[in-house]
Image 1 (tube, rainbow, N blue to C red):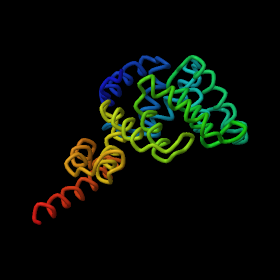
Image 2: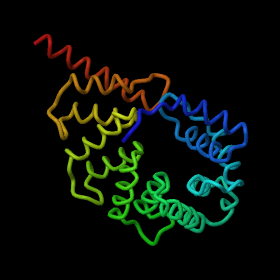
Image 3: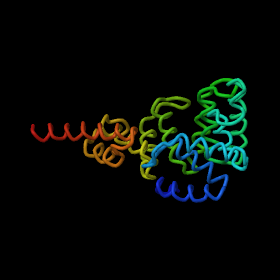
Image 4: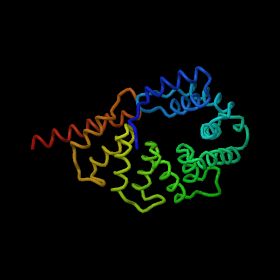
Amino acid sequence: PNTLLDHRAALHWFSLAADRKDSCAQANLGLLLHRGAGGVKRDLATAEKNLRLSYKAGSCPSAKAYAVLLGLAPEAEVPRVERFTKAADLFRASADNEDGFGLGWLGFCHLYGLGVARPDAGVAFELFFRAAMLGDSYWEVQLGNLFFEGIGVGKDVGKAYSWYAKAADAGNPLGKANVGMMYALGHGVPVTLAGAGRAFRACADPEKAADQVCAANLKRVVAAQARRSRR
């Protein structure tokens, strides 16, 4: 089952452990700062530093693969095709151990044809699904996207909404934003301005670029509610 995300608390504890040269903490700190989510601002310099340190230790295969994919490892000097192939191989090794991060990113490689023979949305869907079933809300959102667009699986906006809602319940800001859009546009659920407003309000953070979209959409919903009340 999902647990409520607390990225700021994670940042605190990963930072403490990374300072003690824990390579997995360095990897997780690097990933968190590279993504930037849940009130944690992106810090690419610190992210890259920690991902490189973790790569050298070599104890976290999925983080090692991520460093290769981003060009933060020695493999950055080789042609991109070879680098992506190495990253896909490392993600595959991690996925074989049912690691959610490895499963999801191997799915990403298959979706866009990075380091694999050809793009395969069906394989990507299966890998996203396995990662989502492990409770990783990031991949729950990505799985919802595939259902919403009908990529690698039949289009089903109802299932898309369900996965977005699952991620939102875990505190994922992208999940909250997508739930808001589903309510605002009536995809998978009846058009409900109140529901859209609640979802957008939950993820609106003017200090974060991604959440500024939620803030802007919240203003639109509030304006629409005001127009409706005047009728």
